[in-house]
Image (cartoon, one colour):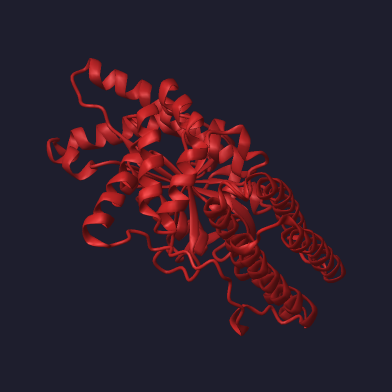
Amino acid sequence: MDSGESIDKIIEAYSRFIPDEVLRLMGKEAITGIGLGDHIEITMTILFSDIRDFTSLSEGMTPRENFSFINSYLERMEPVIASAGGIIDKYIGDAIMALFPKNADSAIRGAVGMLHELEIFNNDRQRSGSPPIKIGIGLNTGLMMLGIIGGRHHMESTVISDAVNLASRIESMTKNYKTPILISEHTYYSLRDPYAYGIRFIDRVKVKGKEQCQSVYEVFDADPPFLREAKQKTKSIFEEALAHYHLKEIPEAMELLSQCLCEAPDDTVAQVYKERCQRFIETGIHESSGEVGLVVHWDDSITIGNPVIDEQHRSLFEHTNSLVDAIGKADDYSQLNSIIEFLSDYVVEHFNTEERLMVETGYPFLDLQIEQHRRFANYFTAFKEEIKKDLNTHRAFLLFRTQILVMDWLVNHTVKIDRHLGRFLRMKH
């Protein structure tokens, strides 16, 4: 073997530890160009997956059998993730952390693909007399730092962001709802067309370490066909049942959940919520960390430092509160329509003002902001139609939808994406 072949093999070996895709994202042509502390700020979707009850499963294996099992599982999952555009960041025992830099849709495809591959893997295990396994997958999308950490003798690529922590916590929540795939609202709002997937709202929770409540959604595309069809058929009454539950209207929630379970007896999330309702009746304890306040509060901690933008944010909060009040009290559509149309126009005016400022200052994530703004505008347009159609019959549901689709989005967008803009503007000056 000549020296050229030897170098090529060394570079190929190193690429297993720092993937070529990471090098390209960081603008490096080869691993020899990587240095400690090199980094880039980027928007990505993070995938965390974990094998359910792995500890008890591994206790019945020898160390050799443990390694053989984990490697056989990981070997099946790696190409599925790669084919969807994902990059394996690291293995943490039986857990997988993967990055999807292209878009959130590729991460959804990767997660669904993993579950389809798991079904094949389990069929092989059962033929050999081994029990099937289950996995949980959590996805979150956000800005993060991708770079090289370590010391002089050992370096590795990694991502650093609270978006990573949230993805891990969402994965752990799959155990609570007994469902395999959960995604954050940030991933949901980053999808090109969420209606192309089987997705439904699951809960509004306050995750440890996060100030703002986060909405969490289930992706059920990998469910067996009969269950997937039943969930799609009952989606509207299921989400209305959850709205009643969060508003502590328990009898209404129980009735709708019973309807869901008649159609889909294997709907584990509906079962979980019905059990919560029963416990509420017995104990008075409401099992949700994301209490619904139906009001957004402005305070100086969420200012970005630009007087025009901050004043517009404050005004958006006030008008959103007026919208909630109008939905709750309106006896006719005239006042409500006036508030809706004003808010709709004001949102567009605010987005245009922000985007002009970003262009003027050379903000590097202008495209991300434009994408987020346009998608919110589309969601709000659809929501206006919901209000006009369902105000008299589904007022409680519309109030809850206002909370998760409008209020939570505005608060989370302001304290995350817009706060990043504020830091950029301060650095410019």
